[in-house]
Image (tube, rainbow, N blue to C red):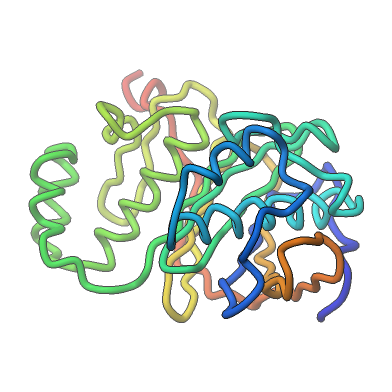
Length: 255
């Protein structure tokens, strides 16, 4: 159903908001950017500039949809993108690839998202051998399935974003075992993961929460002009669920 944003409440599951870059509308410097965003935008050119601008526009559309507030009243905190400044209390995560941008929103709980195009990665085995655990190496190399690797990679990326860490030295803090059993290094038992397969990409979400069900996936129409935040529409997608799993704690496994 297309229309203005009107769903979501703080008690609901996290949501995913997707937008594909259009052919127009990303020129200029819009007046709604905050100071840090304007400074960053001026340092970028070409595709990186377009992706950055679209991602900042989508953040506001996602916050509007999640909080039922007008988009021009929504903004992230300055600096590292993890929280909202207005309205308060929302957690954010962002990913983008090949002109498609994904933003995740949740109220008061950590969330992380990763987006990767579905295409064969010719050297994925070398990544597995260098960065993954011995148990992960064993089953992934035996399976010889690029899609299995991509799923594991997006799970690890989303986990690191949700737990506030970078890739360096941290890829093994989430271990993915055969059957996609997930073991994380956080002591809390209520971490969850969900992978959605779309026509050309895999979108993976990790969050902390006990609510059952599936996060909603929304397609947001590309902006006709980047100068204003009004006039955008969205529809909820019937996205194919590739994986829905809880994340066990390494601490529990070791006991």
